[in-house]
Image 1: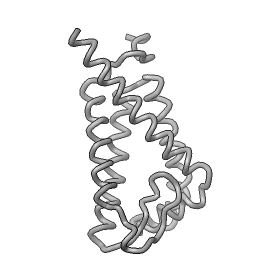
Image 2 (image 1 turned 120 degrees about the horizontal axis):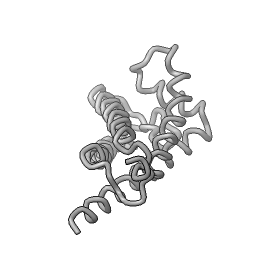
Image 3 (image 1 turned 30 degrees about the vertical axis):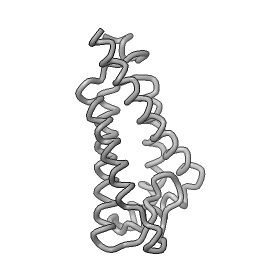
Length: 152
């Protein structure tokens, strides 16, 4: 019974992360130039990396969504998910510390906004919660309805 409960909790974490990555990737892939602009406003990457990162992020996010939804290579997907979320969290925190007024661009769009329109606390808490879900899957990747079960 306990094993079934743990696998169900991991399934919920897997699906929640897959939905978030799918929504983020899909929104960005619709307008790749906006994705490049969202990366640019953080002012942390050299100009030469902005286009590859802006175009590559949606593909990576959609790939993570697919792996998590299918339950394929769950631990690897969770590690990549956590790493990406930590990078996003660092970007948001550094923007807040530097006094920048930007929309994170996490779900498309992004760019400069009025100081009153920033939502850094909400974005930081969201990313911390998603990191916790990723950590759960790193620790206990086995879940119900996962393709990983076919290869064990």
